[in-house]
Length: 169
Image (cartoon, rainbow, N blue to C red):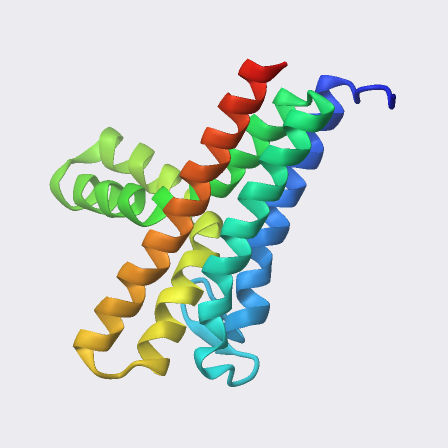
């Protein structure tokens, strides 16, 4: 049996895998969006592959973690996959704080906002490409809802697989 990787190595690999998955969103959308949109190429509805990739990675990571007993790898990958998913809500909250508060709180919120923007590149690229691929508002919203459902299903399935695998050990 292979020797388990040390916890710091598991955490680093988990974070790198999460970054790689979200980095693939740039390839699948053909766009980089930081403060303005930079279109690399037109990808059309190719963006719809991302939720499937995301879910597949979630499930494969949980199966690998159960098999190898690398809990730190599973947890770090799951967190690094989740953070960009919650980035839009977090940035919206920070924007509300920035627009409603004064002085010190506004300054601190601005720093958090700027530090958190890079995490938002993947989700914003996906949302923008979905908007371009589905100009009809109803289809755009349906595409976003479908993407979120597929991604959350993969995430929930991975947690279930990991928990059940841990009980069987």
